[in-house]
Length: 164
Image (tube, rainbow, N blue to C red; front, side):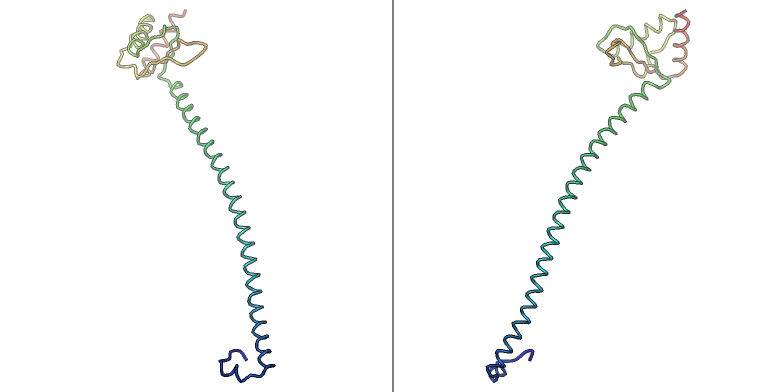
C-alpha cells in the first residue's frame, strides 16, 4: 500500500490504518534522518572550506607582501644599475677639486677651464652632461660626460702629460 486515496483509507480497519501510519512514519523517518546526515555533512564541508579559504587568504596576503618587497628591491637595483652604468661609460671623465657652484653653466665653464689648463680644448657643445657627484668624503667631485670618445682620450692623455 504505497499511496491511497481517501476512499481506500476510510475502508481500512483500525489495525490496517495503524500499520499504514507506521509505514509512513518509517519512510519519513528514514528520509529525514538521511536529510539530517546530509545537512551535517554539508555543514562540515562548509566549515572545512571556510578554514581553507582563511588559510589561502593569509597565504595570499603573505605572498603579496613578499612580492611588494621584491618589486621595491628590483626597482632599487635597476636604479642603481642605471646609475652605475652612467658612470662606468667610456665617455665619462671625473674632475675633482672644483669649488661648489650653483648652476650647470658655471660648472661647465669651470670644467672647460680645467681642460684648458692641461692644454685640451673641448667645445662646450661636446659636453653632454656635467654635475657634482654626491660623496661625503670628496664633496667636490664632478662627472663630465663627453659626446666623443676622442675628446675623453685627449683629456686623459694631456692629464697624464701634466702629472709628470
